[in-house]
View 1: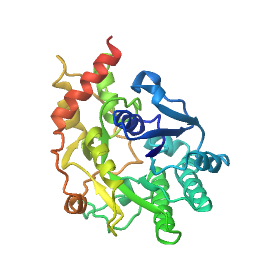
View 2: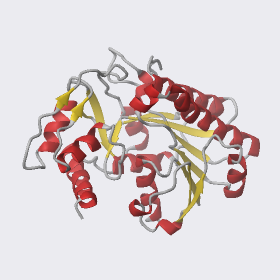
View 3: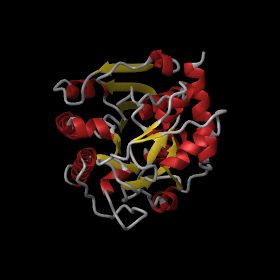
View 4: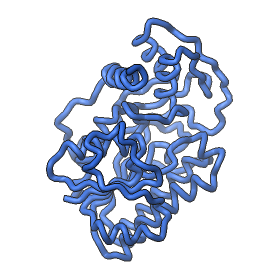
Length: 310
């Protein structure tokens, strides 16, 4: 079975590639504008990588050559701050990249199973929590709008053009191999390893739900077998923590507590997010226990320590 991962050099993409490499029944392909990091991908030679932007007109030729059975569409600008600072690049990456992918598949008349990465941020600021899949998609923030647009385009190509698309809207993901230090968890861990105070953009009270990356990947593999008429799923864990609680948890794995620098100037993010994942659980009945936040954080910190102190 031929599996294509777009965004293979990213945090989720790298972890997914490492999962697929361990399996014997996959021929693995990756498309990413960045080169894959050999240091973080086991058996790197098992991945057929194409250094390509999803916006490229050459994408259709690559898809024709691969003719994948499964596509995990993960490629995107995933950082809220960078999105706010550079909206044009964000819209090009997050909207037109997916549009080019879907339309190339339509033109080729191939029918891969597509698992498309959306986000819980498509629901925006809401008093109606936890988010459910039928809630309105709305936000004023650049990153959120880009993901809403791609989400709606995916729905359009599913409903009107018949592409076999399943959309997942996950909560915040954490785990090893996340080098995006603008994100809270890798930023705090690196700060502690480097013995520098972490910097909080918010007031420390913003709430997020967190899922360990290995658990999310198991969910995504289950979605490749989706034959249900439902094709949009929230994916979460139930572990909801604010910034201060995340910091407290991470600091417990070190022999010190660093006082954070609190900027309290975050104007481009949603204060509180929780999602309802009951639909996915009801339909798929996962037969594994989710990783507790404390256990996932222990594994994550262990990986970063090995990476930085070796």
